[in-house]
Image (cartoon, rainbow, N blue to C red):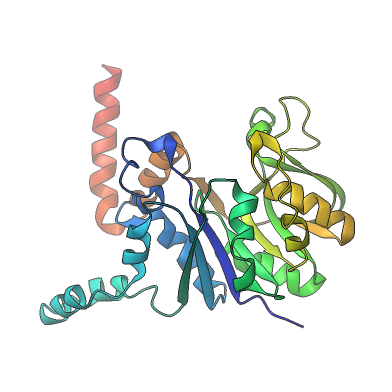
Length: 291
């Protein structure tokens, strides 16, 4: 049985929702308190047993490579000043091999995953999207890998969303439920309002068998004029079973402004040094607004 040791992180998007901040800085480098969003994703992959990560980048994304590179001058300075706790944070992602490939044209998520096909070869692999940060006792990706080890089939992570939000996501039409795992009849990319077959939305975590590339190779254009990963998943599901797994954990959407602000506040409230001061500030701000 081949194990899941490789992961793809697509990071080639333009980040238009966060302009002008993302004009010269990748949206993946926007910090949640003191850590770039993409570092949360990389750390989840590491905690899930991933050994090799390929980040699919685009123009203007060099800051991502610099962030995960060694910085001798900075590390030497921290050692000399005996700031070992900060040193550990700087080196936190050093125990995984990170590779990079550029998506030359913005053709969609399916195309971004396809760009990494030669890196993956004929192995099962994971995909983690940077717009979703998940806090869980067992890392979200590890939960999916455990399901893959049981089923030997592709697995996508899902959670329930309000009916009025289903048009924003890829949605699964469940067939048979066994605990938190579902056999799936079909996968639909961003169904029109009121037409979704369920409220189980795909949440940016996937484990695939390499057969997914058979369908991504076709470069078929779908919703929004892009090559959609969800369309390839649906075609794969017709060849071999693809499961959906309702993973445990708190999912944060950092791909849009309000979700990013909420995530920043909640993560800051989990910080022992910031919590009390932030609570006092928020209480005072609320009183000021209510006057």
